[in-house]
Image 1 (cartoon, rainbow, N blue to C red):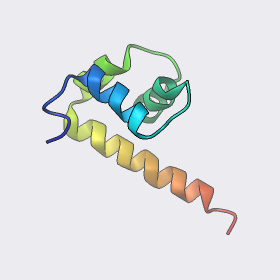
Image 2: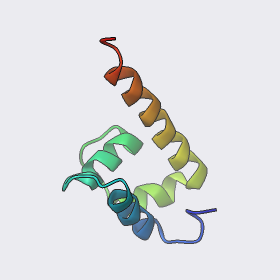
Image 3: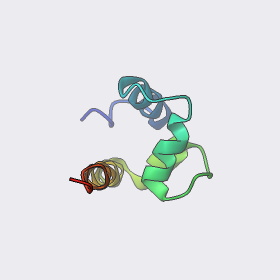
Image 4: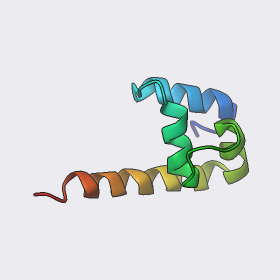
Amino acid sequence: MYLEAKSPETVAHELAKELKMFKGAMTVLRYALTGQKVGPPIADVIELLGVQRTLNRLKQCKRMSGTLLHSDE
């Protein structure tokens, strides 16, 4: 699996780069995973949550953002 082969810190930085996120990408990622704007380093959050829970939370956030973006239609 993609996440298991790399360190959480590497995954976090690659994810931000891959998604072409803006400068505050780690803050956005932290908020998606924890619901908090500040907290421990995102690599620690990913490590504590584990691969499956991290992926589940990111998928949930993606679904929710899609719902919010299309709520005016």
